[in-house]
Length: 185
Image (tube, rainbow, N blue to C red; front, side, top):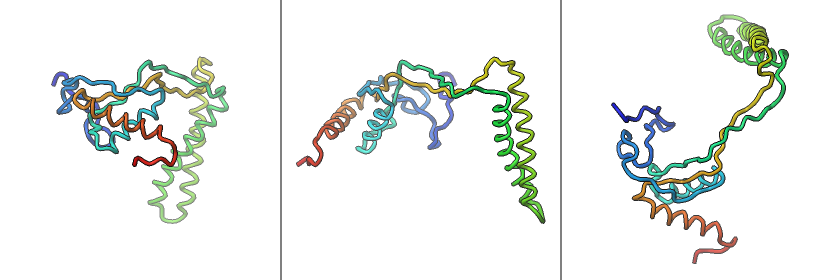
C-alpha cells in the first residue's frame, strides 16, 4: 500500500485522516484553506470547538502550528544524590506495584509483603539511579523539561467547507465583541 495511512488510531479509535482525504488513505485530494490564525493554541482550539458546537464537520478541519521552536527549560542541577533519590522514588512505585501483586495471593500478613516490595524497590531504584548518573561522567548534570511551541496556529479546512467555516468564525468573533448584557434581538 503506497501512500497509505500508517499512523496509529486516535483516542476515539478512528484512524487519523488529514483534511482533504475522503477515505483516510489518500490525504490531499482536496486543497485546504486557512480560515483563521491565532497566536495561542487555546484560541485555535476554541475556534474549532465553536465550529463543532455549530454543526460544522470538524473532521474536515485541522489546527496547524507553524514556525516551531523547541524550548528546553532547565529545572535544576542533577547530582548523584538527587539521581539516587529520583531512582528510589521510581523504584518504590515499582516495588509497591509488585508488592500489591504478590500481596493479593498472600494468605496472612499481606501488608508486610507490600511494605517489603516497596522497600526493596526503593533500595534498588536508588542504586540504579546513582549508577546511571555516575556513568554519564558529568556530561548532563542538570534536569530539564522540553516543550514544542509554535508562533502561530492556523485553522485549516477543506476548500469546499471554507465559506461555511469563515461565516461561523465571523459569528464567533462578532459574539465575542458584543457588550456584556447585549442580546441578539
